[in-house]
Image (cartoon, rainbow, N blue to C red; front, side, top):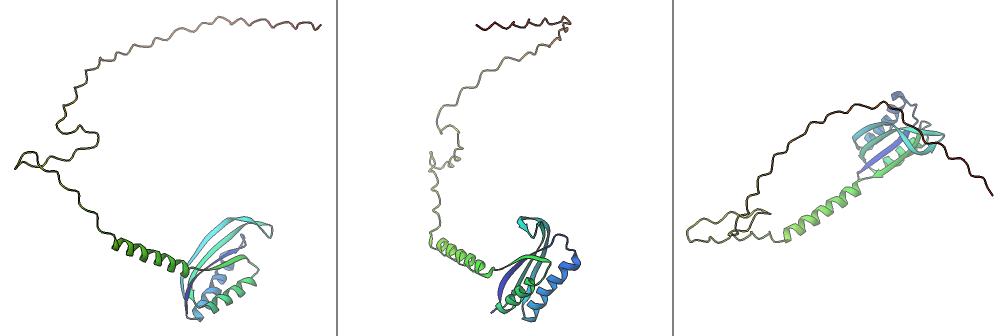
Length: 185
């Protein structure tokens, strides 16, 4: 039975594409030999590690998503374990998460189908027979039939006074004399 997996591995930060590409090729060959498929390959680049590994604080991250049987995963992990360039790796089966998400969606759809649709709001009856119904009131608007608010009084015009610069005084500032120390008794 084929399942969906993600393989994340961290390679030494000084590794070049000549080192990384064969590692991706190892995974690809093993998956394809077991009649699986490679869904995506992402090279995330050089990133900081959460903690030092072999006195290194950075590593080159690579993510490979594939579909294959479990026997291929065991072989992939065995081959990555013996590679000197690989610092860490982890394989995660993600089809379980997809199944759980799918179940939740089905339950939500079922619940939504059981709920009756919301009832439409009743229209207000016209005040005068044969007249059109009044428009719904806006929030903050006065109630229908209420007296209109009084118009605000006009404001007095604001007159700006010009600011006249004052000439600077060049008089020296006298410093206060320092207090003499008091003799101790």
